[in-house]
Image (cartoon, rainbow, N blue to C red):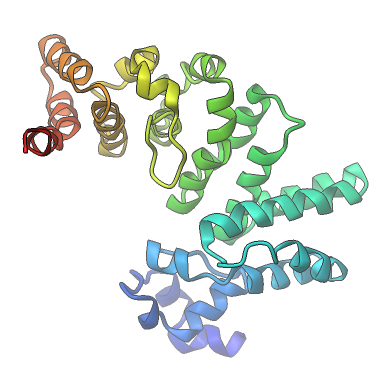
Length: 287
């Protein structure tokens, strides 16, 4: 692998933009990604990682090779090997493995996964928190917070997906706990609070309670109605756009009110994006 690193050069590897198609990803990059020695730089690379091969290398790295067959057997149920099924399945297998180890060793191993150089491995660790039913919602959110603030886009997306089911299961408490998050100085944390509670999140089950009564999450939305960061603005507008699919009049009212009390460039952008599909939906209903 040292030879592989010199082919493109370490600096070139780290500064690459990433291929647009999976077939265009250099073999050297794929190999390093699958060995857990490089982070992905775009969605194409993120989706191209072979998590089963990566598992083998990570177990060897941690001196846990003896558990490879056991974990592979546990993954056989994920027949299509799609990434959004593989990551939770791998997290489940890791949780099962850690239960076999002494507490101190299990804590050490999780710490290594949590801080691993590979964003894919950190995704596993994030989902481990979301799947650990021994943790209360409060403890799950505390545990997922570092992943919500991770520098890598993939880890941040997996972070909210990992606790989405727990948030849905105890929505009232979740909305209360996330109140502080929307006031955090870290834009990633603010964005997490909104994205995790979207009524119809991408790659996630819908939250029926919010589809019926989106107003219960209004305190979170109000806090970021004029957020200066586009990353957060996009999440807020997507949240409202989701709500508008079942409660368009409510969203229109909120948008009108926001423009009256917060005539800022940020609010105008959020409101415009929030209502972007309304005209299309109204046309479909009239046809």
